[in-house]
Amino acid sequence: MSVTAAEEWRNPRNPLRDKRDKRMPRIAGPCAVVIFGVTGDLSRKKLMPAIYDLANRGLLPPNFGLVGFARRDWADEDFGQVVYEAVRDHARTPFRQEVWDRLAEGFRFVPGTFDDPEAFARLAATLTQLDTERGTGGNHAFYLSIPPKTFPAVCEQLHASGLADPRPGRWSRVVIEKPFGHDLASARELNRVVNRVFPEESVFRIDHYLGKETVQNILALRFANQLFDPIWNAHYVDHVQITMAEDIGLGGRAGYYDGIGAARDVIQNHLLQLLALTAMEEPVSFGPSQLQVEKIKVLSALRLVGPLEQTTARGQYVAGWQGGEQVVGLLEEEGFAHDSVTETFAALTLEVDTRRWAGVPFYLRTGKRLGRRVTEIALVFKRAPHLPFDATMTNELGKNALVIRVQPDEGITLRFGSKVPGHLMEVRDVNMDFSYGSAFAEDSPEAYERLILDVLLGEPSLFPVNAEVELSWEILDPVLDRWAAHGRPDPYPAGSWGPESAVRMLARTGREWRRP
Ligand code: BG6
Image: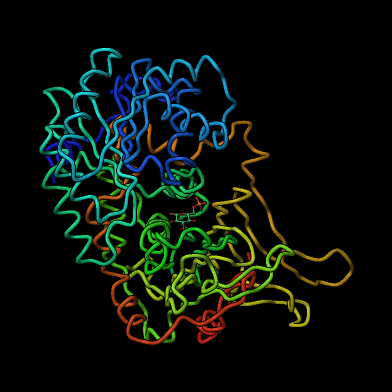
């Protein structure tokens, strides 16, 4: 544990001692962000728009710089045009010329490749110049939005050019996008490479799900209320379903996705983090280390339920209909090998070996080209131990459920039985809804706005640490090994809810997937 983390552990920040008004947003101090992989999709659709949105919300300082690094023959103005188009097409907040003009004065572009020390020397010179001209103050965040195989080269170059070592009182941080490795061994190796250059407290690993409002609200729901905790355990909960479904296909993403698949892309990070927040104990405080400790405890207590051929499922979409449109299967998508065994659907059964959760299955599923885009966490409760009604009157009563709607239509649904109006005592399921859209006037910021700002503020709570990443791979590795050794994923038609094997996976214990 680092000194800072250890100190914080012994001495959690006392809110009463901290005089700052917690309702006022914190503004980043002087700094520059360098994006590697500036020509990629993530940078165009998420990172550059989020930086503009932060500026528009007044959360970036006037002395802020944005530096693009890529193998392109661009001048600063060309880079500015690329950022402009990204902001125009993808920013969340309205375009304001004066905000843009001020932000754009801090744009710089450095052409170069990752194996070229001279390019990194130019980058260092550009940052020094920004520090003096624009007052970015020697504080630098390096955002690696690039394939993991290039992390070692970039980290080494940052080290060799002195950029990883900040001047006294300044900071130098590295931001890493997933996938963080493709199994435990490669994740360990990557962690070793990154930590050789950047100490763990300067490493910010992005799991953008943790930046989502609805995901942070899991903590508020569980730990700010009296209502839920008494039933949040194996005595009342029958099982938990965590679903992340997408309707989009993988056309255009073969370079990233082929050979990676749904389990590595989504379960290893987003879904295991959602599970950890759902299952963890109350942290001592919301300081970063306390939160991480509780998540790590859950991940260490997780175990796969077997036999894996029955308790896991994987699928690959074939041609079908989606939203009234006929779409092709994965093997016909551009760039995918015609015999690709990459899974586009993955489901697992897990249990958390603790007193709170003993015997409660946690079912995780994710997929592309499913019925619709939805992410939700559903706690499905046991049936009432006794029903004093005629059985025919409760035919339509299902199990009670508490559903956290992560997206879209963000909110929470409570599902329970209610009497159908009339003279019979007939009971049927109804929903009680909380919806962000109608309860709050404020729009939720994009996850990347929150996370980029936290990097600049040096606030690590929402970033998984090394141990979380490695534990997640430890859980997934046996499944991936089994799948690699046994045939192909099961086919499912685009627009459906996945392969039959996923239905059987729950049916074996008399359960079924919710239709979100
Ligand atoms: C990314 C995955 O992490 O999350 C993508 O790599 C996926 O495959 C994306 O499409 C979904 O993000 P969101 O925020 O739209 O649910």
